Image (cartoon, rainbow, N blue to C red; front, side, top):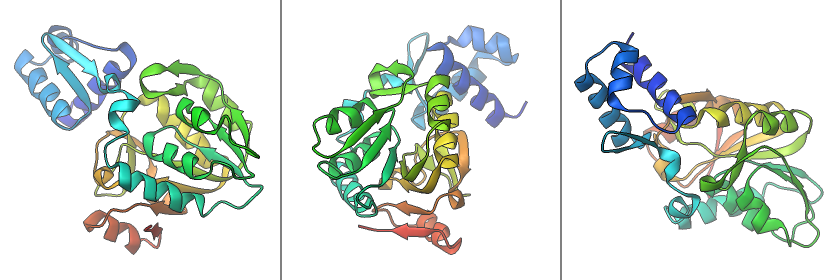
Length: 246
């Protein structure tokens, strides 16, 4: 097994189990403990997970409140720009995440229908006049103020949206949109399937950001809304995919 594939499987296991130790991983993948430690150190350095003495902690231990202040001004601009694409009366599907929550803030008071599995978006819009809020079910993930799982995916497959705003853990140099949590990947794919148009909302730290789980090529989106510049943004533009700067 190639090291990259092994690290991907390790990360997936951590996402589902909540934590694994070096010895069990070494036995499972039939490599030395030092090799596993190197794998975990690399994943930790990339922000994929957090290590503790004797084991690992899923990166989901970082809470929504801890992540939200990062690039807050950029997220606000991105959210405002996203909201400008929404017409009155639209059905808007808003993904979980701190940047997409900024789009919800910019939609406060608008005459739209919002579909979401984000507890943060629900909290932002629950008292919004003229806004109809549709809450998608699922398993509550308290740390990231979201609902995930097969129930959420099934709910999204039964609905249709005029426009969707999705978040990401990162966009790789080969222009693959990535996530870091296995339960979120099928949900994001469902959002893309069931939306007339879909935009990726991403702050500058998402290029390349983190994540090793593939969602789709960036070209599957109608556009990318970001304040970022640089080689990856230039590559996105070269594909003909719209890049919208605030």
